[in-house]
Picture 1 (cartoon, rainbow, N blue to C red):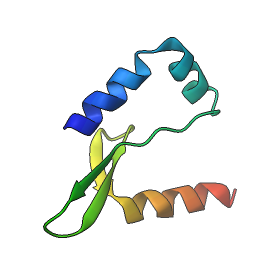
Picture 2: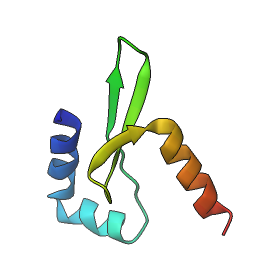
Picture 3: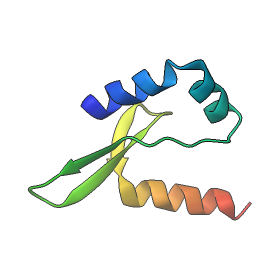
Picture 4: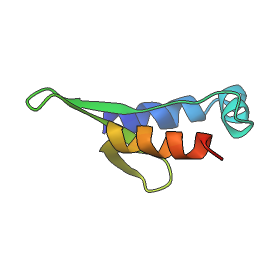
Length: 65
């Protein structure tokens, strides 16, 4: 959960929050599980960590529009 706290900390700065809202800056919160070698990305919409492959798939589908 430390990644989520750090994301909240970053977003507490107005200049960062403005750039994120204006789509000038993207921030990611990753969680790595060393035992299985998997990376999870924090999803701001669902408020859950999801496999990084899901994040990549979603980003690619948005780029096609």
